[in-house]
Length: 98
Image (cartoon, rainbow, N blue to C red):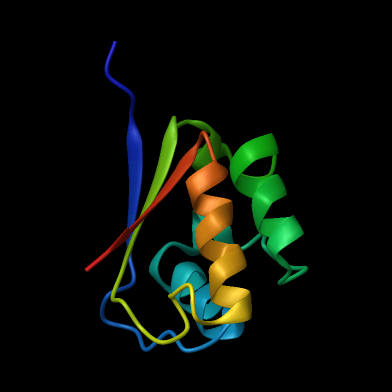
């Protein structure tokens, strides 16, 4: 059976920090992601992997996030590197960089 995906495209947003990333996600899909209140990567992990925070997000198998490559979203940025690893390790989310 094909997995259902919730696509959140933040390519129109400048993402140069974790705050920018969170702001963009919530702006594009407030219903699914406004529960990321702690603004930490642990809180994001809980929302996408442990579920139970958003009926909309929980009704999809995968959260697919599309973002533009930036200095923040690279292995060269300490927080960005951890965010990239979070998505790489996630079973219910994927980050697509262009």
